[in-house]
Image (cartoon, rainbow, N blue to C red; front, top):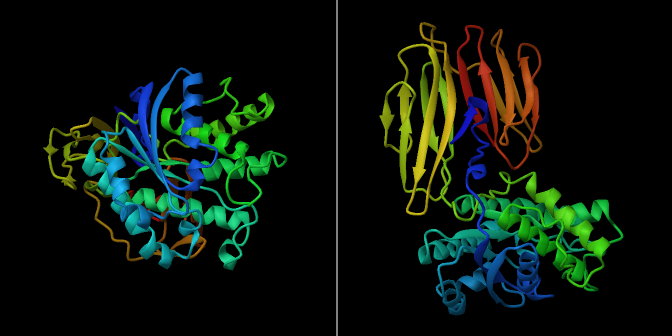
Length: 411
């Protein structure tokens, strides 16, 4: 069971409780970024060298977008060919990096439709997004992606947004591994001469990243080098492990045999709590509030009658598996007058979230989605507090002079 304090509820650790499978089936749906150098085959050989087994198949057409796959009957033939453990989906190399308005109409809806089709075939399948990389010198079509760094960042943000829009689907962060190698080992060329498709080194890095993402284990130590020398292969193995294994929660990399995961956010107003279910792939919910009261509602509200520490527990379940998340809530405001956030100003700017208040004695604490303390408790009496924005939500804990607490979730 996952058990964490109130301010850490967005960083569950349930994946530690379920062992990874040693044998899985994977279908790749993509384009030439997958079939150049035979990424599926390289992944299978790499896995075998480490005592794992992957049954792989692919549906890859050069230049295919998500929309093209949605409109291609052969894509569905592949999806329906068996109950896949994991289906990897990938867009055309440029499409996720285009302006957000274009992605919202031409890319995101089709990625979600493809995901829904995969789950319609087998409810316990996992969708995994193949986060690709920026071109060697970016894309000159517009200034927003005219360098590797700009293009790679837009691809990262778009693939994370697509995964979040697809019920928190898995993400294999190959583009992040690409950036890591470029920054730390610039003599390793990951591109073929067109400055877009992968070289043998690039495909091997992708295979290592997929191995770490699928099995949640390091590929370091494999004696399969994909035609590379042992030193280069070792660098790429270590790079993929460094990028993936420290960020399993960020990339939603739960065990493939546990697609249902319990998540929820909580807003506390004195003795009352509002619970917002954010579970992945769940169909039923069972809540216990720690005071003998329970609920089967999806998003319950509860009010405590006595001050104290309470453990709020959610069991999210489906026909695939069940998962439990527990959060500790502290109630110490009974008898205190309730308060509103009228005197608190929260402004979301392009780079920061700015919080200010005219209420004397108001304290702010900020925690990241991974549970990391970003800003320790400090007063809002005199100056606004600026919180750097990322693509992940943050939690603002506001405590007034009487000890009443409010939790605000900001993106």
